[in-house]
Structure formats: C-alpha cells, structure tokens
Image 1 (tube, rainbow, N blue to C red):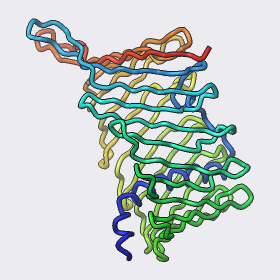
Image 2 (image 1 turned 45 degrees about the vertical axis):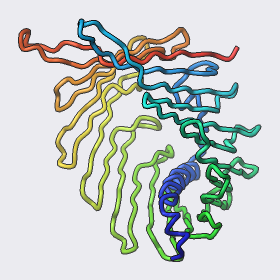
Image 3 (image 1 turned 90 degrees about the horizontal axis):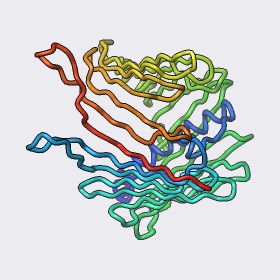
Length: 343
C-alpha cells in the first residue's frame, strides 16, 4: 500500500462513515421513494422559522445559597425560506466554536457544506447531482483547498449501482457495489481490489429497515441491527448484535396519538438499564423523566410558543431526602430558545 494511503487512514474512516450513511439512505429510497425532509422537519419546527438561538446554562448555588446561571453552550440554527438548514453554529464555553454552513441549488439539493473550527475554515465538501436530484459526486477539501477525498455514485433505473472511493491523490482505493432483490439490498465493499465486507439490508412493505447485517470476508457476522415496526412510522424495538452476541436492546411504547411515551434500554445481559418516560399536554411534549434501574434521575420540563415550537427546557435532578423519605427536584440546567420567523 502506498504511503499516501496510510496518511489517508483517518480521513478514510470519516469518509467511509459518510458513505455508509449515504448508501443506507440510497438503499432505503431504492425500496420506497420517501419525502425528503426539510431542515424544519428534521428539527421538529413548525412554521417558517428563520433562526433559533438556544443558550444552555448550568444552575449552581453560590456561598449565600442563591441560584446563579452559568452559560456553557450556545447553538444557532439558520434556515432559508424553503426550510433548508443553511447554518449551524455550536459555541462551547472553553471557548471552542464549531460552525457548519450549507448552500443549496434551486432544487433544494445541498451543493456545499463548510465546517469551521475556531472561526477558521476546516473542511469544505461539494456535492453534485443528476437530473433526478441523486448525488453523483462528493468532494472534500481542507482549509488550503487541497483534496481530502471524493466519492462518485452511479445509478441504473434510479437505483444506486456502484460507488467509487478516492483518496487525496485522486487514486481509487475502494468500490461499493449494490445489488437489489425485492425488499433486500446487498452492499459489497472492496478496498484495494480485495473484498472487505458485505452488508445485507432488509426492508418491510413500508420501506422501513428491519434487518441490517455486516459480514467479514469469511462470511462471519460483524454487526447486526434488528428493528421491529408498527405500521409505517413507529419503531417498536431496536436490537444490536456484535459478532452474534447481544450488545443492547431498546424498546419503544406509544400512546393512541402515536406519540412516544416510553423508551427503555437493556444491556448485553438483557438486564434493564435505563428508561425515558415522556408526558404530553394538548399534543405537546410537556416533560421527560429519566430513570436509572427504576430510580428517578432527572426530569426535563418544556414550554412552547404560540406556533408550537419549544422555547425553553429546564432540567432537574431528583434528590432523595432521608428526612422525608422521598425525592424532590433540584434545578440543574436551563435552555432558553429564541425563535425568529420569516415574515
């Protein structure tokens, strides 16, 4: 293997993860054409939102016992009038500032993403599409506009057929091939002309992913995901296996309005680990209670504006009182969200 390919190992890992995400999305679309969600929908926003600014504060007490708020994180989302996310900025207290900006074409396809670190451009990624708005090329560049790597996608009858992976020297180092069998997608990865792995994904009649399993060159299972669904939207359980051994399982419960009311996690022994309980009022999420081993840990209270968008989130810790032999709530964290709408 050439020296250039060794230097490319870190970027390959990141780029491969991106490729897998794109591939899975393409496979799902191949099973069933679905609506491409806008940035508003992805963030669960209602109305024509232009910007959200969320400031999270830690709540502490000073020596006098008075509550003081200490800001430690600010997240800013900005959207265009079509609902596309055009900028995402995350600022931590350290200060450590990360910012993403996105550009879109007239068909609302994302054509460029820029990642900034401490105010300086870190990575820029360009995307190209065919006439059906399917991605055909993605290229990433560093802060000096030098190529980090690229992917090329090829389609047949609207389905992703092949994906080519290139390193920073524009040398092809990998190929992902796709084959479709009714509700199954078979994804085969070759690295440096050698078989690396095979991933088989199965979908139900609604296009929901039910089983995804990755195998090594000897046909041994590396990773397996099993999902059960109720109808077309509600996932009932998600189970992960590593090398055929149970790793974790998550179960979901919904109310009559198809709103999630309970999410429980179990460890690799099948033992209950923790759960979230969701409470609603007038169709809106009012609060989230978090339990560890059936012991209350935190409670999060939410408030909303007239449009139905969340404008605050207050997190409390459950603290046990030996005097009263009961739990009481102590404020721990507060997030205020300012929302600006397009006129």
